[in-house]
Length: 472
Image (tube, rainbow, N blue to C red; front, side, top):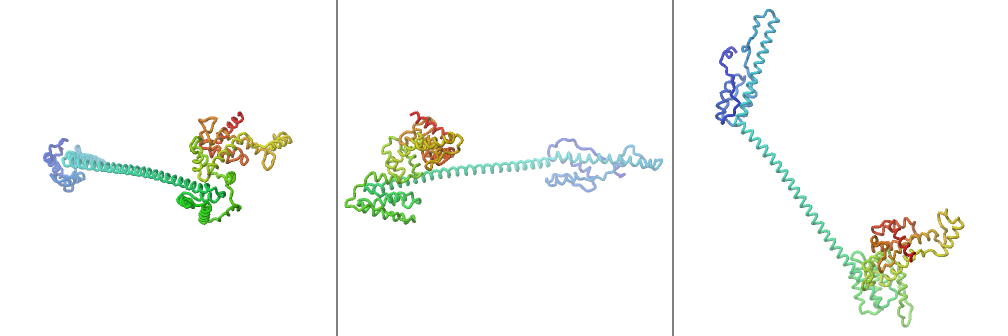
């Protein structure tokens, strides 16, 4: 524009120095923006002390300013195309002039951008706005962190409360189980005492046939586990007080009928004693014989061993307490079974199970087969193989003076074998006979019954006992 080309143009910018306040800033930069607004194609807003929204709009407009300013006439040493000698020279001059004008235009745009950026940097309102945004962002971050911390704290407290509740519940359950166990043990003791009281009534009368009485006692158990409870049996015993023998037997027959009815079983025929003017007193040998006829169950043998450990030798009324512990056996039966176990183990460990006749047959068979060195099995004699008999004598090493069940189990190594383990070994040796099982299989089963011992340790223990007995 020829008019602007000759005008007095001020393209200077203020120094990059922060103003004192907003008024100082507007006083310095307001005229600058006003001078440069003339070059904008579109009208631009003037700088004022308005709100932050007006300030943001102001800078947004100036950052996007489009200038119409033409620097064609401002080119120094510009070429005059009219003076060109040819068309090519004219075109070259025009291109050179255009390059110079574009360079000046670019510098002008940079000047405008620098002006807007410098003013934006020092504008107190923009500085305050950025600080506000920064504080809001920081506050949001702190709130988020605080929320996270609060959530973690709540989760931690919840976990602690759940752990405390779980621990409390476990303690209550343990206390409840302990109480239930105590009640159950008390109920079992009540059953044992009731059985004993009921049985002693008939033993005191000298009753010969105790089979029904014993079956009634066995039918008594803890509530929910048997036909009768301890209270039922005590009630039956109370009915027997002061009755004669015949009346007591009649009551037992009535109770036995109730037992069979509830069990859904048939009543066993009663053994009638031969008629006699005056029945002779019951011989002790007859009672002993009848008691001997009753086989001991595995559970009863286990209870016997536990009772022997619980009531060691020297305990007052030891056999009465043992019988009370087992319930279904009398003191005499317990004493005889203990002696039987002792004799069986002593004979087993000493190798006394081999009959001389069987040994003679074995020797004869070995001589006929070259001493039997290549024979896989022995000769059968009276339904039992010789090898089986020999194995029974070899495997029967359980005597380890643990056969003294009613006293104190003398051991080759008392530090390794407790009385409970010794008793378990004895019971297992009695249960798993050498004639019924292969030696390896036998001692594996025995070891399963002995807590804390392996089959090899059991075999070693038996061998030690056998060696001790042979020395004697």
